Length: 293
Image (cartoon, rainbow, N blue to C red; front, side, top):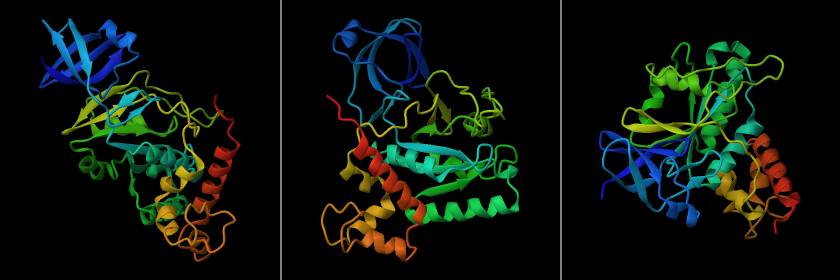
């Protein structure tokens, strides 16, 4: 039986890439019975007599999956944040980073619209970028208008399935258009009233960029820490996690415990104070979360 990868899901159809061919398939009824929904990114076994009428027979094991956006087998997330319009937010970035780290997906930070910054804003973004690089993240500063940093992004996409994620209006579609000008993806300007853009992507689709695939998604519709427990949060902040190995007490949450290496690192400015404040805020949010039954 032929095998392939689902690159698009739309209106009950799954478009399976097999070699150089794309075959339109439906899911067999057995998936509904077993509550298995094929996702974009799935490796599947299918049967087809032609390129318009096929059936997915088997979905292979996934290494990961996201619920919103619905996609599987993601290698990395390109977290797209604008320098301005809307303004860069470390709190929102750290929230995205926690969700991505928790799902064992490699994050790459891409700050867009650098061409719109004034000198002070540019210096501020450079400072934040350096903080996140010290924390262990790859950070790219880009502009879809001037193409600053666009070429630097290509090597990260090679051979990978990448998700572009970020709040609406930050320039995800513009960035994809800069990477592949032939796409002509629709973009929307920022609403001056709301300070954010409208989603311009309505379905999940894998787009070929070089030898990799990029998922242009409708974005994360939920940024809540639904499945993350308090003891998990430490591992979603790599800079905090590294220091926590020096804490006196195992399982230290870095709040009130004595001889905490993380709090010492904050005092010594080895970890930015805003990262620690976000950590504490997220920890409280998880603590206050209503239990599920």
